[in-house]
Image (tube, rainbow, N blue to C red):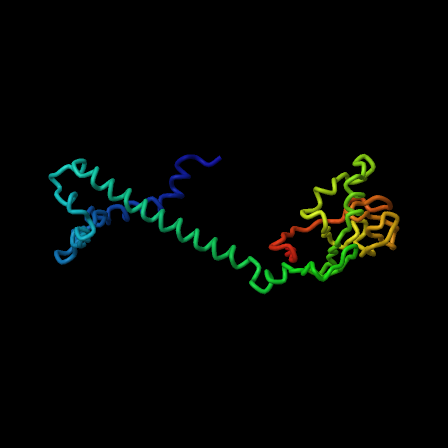
Length: 237
């Protein structure tokens, strides 16, 4: 093994160089010199914005407590908030109203949604067919015998129980849609086993009140909304 003195001797050139370097350094090299007189290191020359124009007069005095004017300032805030809410609600109502009205039917569509029928043109015991909303509309002028027969029907015998008086406003007139409740076929008036309506497609029989009496149809013929403005006129729709 090499001795300690031999190791130090091998490193002596490097140790001498390090000593010379440390001696050559001065304290002034480690401490930064003072800044020149024309240079300011503190940002004390920045102008602070003046927000006095945006402040309320009640809080501009630094020697006066803001609590003294808190009620007045709070009332003003409530007033602004309330007014903004009212305006917002009114604007929302206007937008919703216009949106809903834009989805409603136009005047020409509403005109087609109703039909006026002159009852004087339909003889007693006969049925007339009209087109209403793309569907056949049956208007039947019933006889006294037909009225008595339909009012005397036993409700227990009906598949879709409904008394005749529940389906008419004026017992002389029965108004129903001519659409079979089975598969949507158009029945034939004054036909079938009960003298009312008959659907030849699948054999559904309706009486003169439009009630299903026989066949596969599950329900009675639909009765639309209608009214009589006078004795000789009916408006459907």
